[in-house]
Image 1 (cartoon, one colour):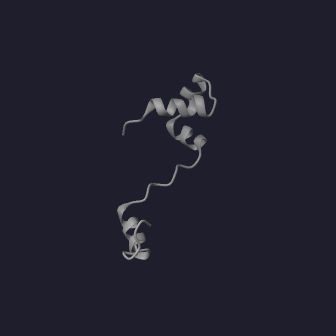
Image 2 (cartoon, rainbow, N blue to C red):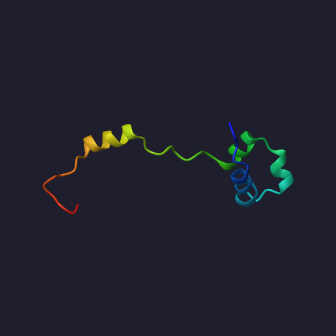
Image 3 (cartoon, helix red, strand yellow):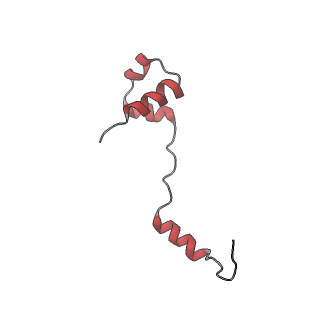
Length: 64
């Protein structure tokens, strides 16, 4: 698994205000913990289809 070091450095140094020496002393797991919970995963096709079935478009209305 490749790590996006540039993004991790921006998050740690710019986002958290860590000094470079503090950033490089952390493990990737420690940095993730400091950054907080990850954002939820984007909606997948299965969930989209579920919503489409639950809330179908009304073919009688145009421009909605």
